[in-house]
Image (cartoon, rainbow, N blue to C red; front, top):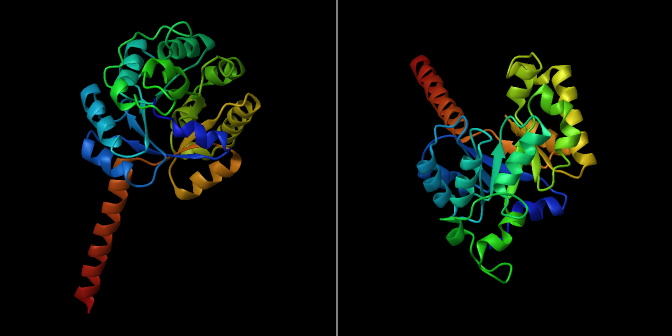
Length: 266
């Protein structure tokens, strides 16, 4: 099975730079995958992406060495299994609040006897079926190579964090800053710099470090991304494809309109 290079980066003590795809397009996913990211996450929770489109986006990403991940809409075992069967090398799961939630999620992603994932890796056996381990049988290596990443974004999850981090098979945790802010009674965007939110993020990071579990989060700028890496976060998502498109388009249009005004005054 093809190696999951995310794990290799973490083993070196380094940070993974993750791209984020919310636009339902295999072409935009392919473009993103060619920009130097370590991994790309297809967002089927808040992105406009259904299962069939997610599969074509996974195929587009697989034209590169980038590791493909999927954020699922909910902690539903059937969805988790289908995304892994489609060739995703890991899942990011929102709103994991308890040990029971974490065990349910991990169990759905691991084959027996470790879990209860049903056998049928329809695309994964082709995409991940190389012989990097000296054998091409997907299910013999899938448990070790695929990642289960759970989102910690509520008061309940923070309260149960120590126990959640001890669930066997958990690969990493991920902070959704907007949801965390709202859970703490703050605005989803402006509230991310509130002292209570910053304290919660620091606690989540330090607790993850204590258990040797990589922690990640979504960032909205180069400065925030680099500061997060400096703090010790090891999985950094940089904005998203729709925000890159919006930001660059807005910048270019603004520059041209400013230029037109200058020409009028010349």
